[in-house]
Amino acid sequence: MRRYGLYDATRGLATALSAGLAGVLLWVATLVGVQTVTHFWESMGIVAAAGLVVALSQVIGGWTKGHGVRVSPGTFLLAFVPVLVCVGWILVATQPGNGWHEETVVRWSHQLGIFGLVHSLGLWHGVLAFGFGLMLGLTLDTVPAPVEPLAQPVPPARRRRVDELDDAAANEPVTAERERQAAYDGRPHTATVGPRRRRTPDDEDVDE
Image (tube, rainbow, N blue to C red; front, side):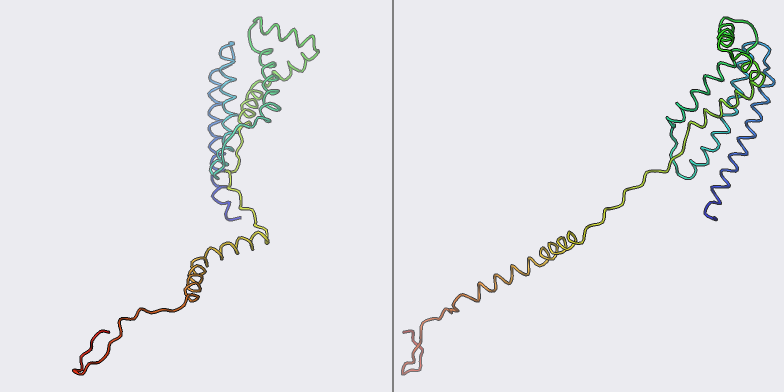
């Protein structure tokens, strides 16, 4: 387990820093307030950013291990999009003030028989915004870096054939030299001899 020491320390430090930053963002959201429609959505955006920061801290932990960061399409479609619709519906229906969009969503909620649920959950609009940001961050994923595929094992029969071809290629110069020597040995041996010489009475060699 010692090999995870650096990773655990990095992940723990990133999580602690993200929690501190999220706390600061929540405090800023309280300063903005929710008295008006503009302030309401500004506060919800800040709270959602706090949730996003917490989720990104886990992505950073995997990124430090050499993993690549990607967007998970399945998580985005199956988890984030439904959360986006539900949270958006509730926040629009419970925002302060009166607008055509709020009245429309409230009317739809009454028609669907879910206004009581929407109103109850709307009391926790800050929690909903935080969860929205958290879910957005969870759409990011870390995957191991691609690894080069291992070489396929060579079958024994093919390996023997390759070895035979390698041996033949290595012995080719020796085989050619032996063939040239055998061809040379098969020819009759001849030698070039000069003109025969005879001795004269004066012991002088004279060419015949």
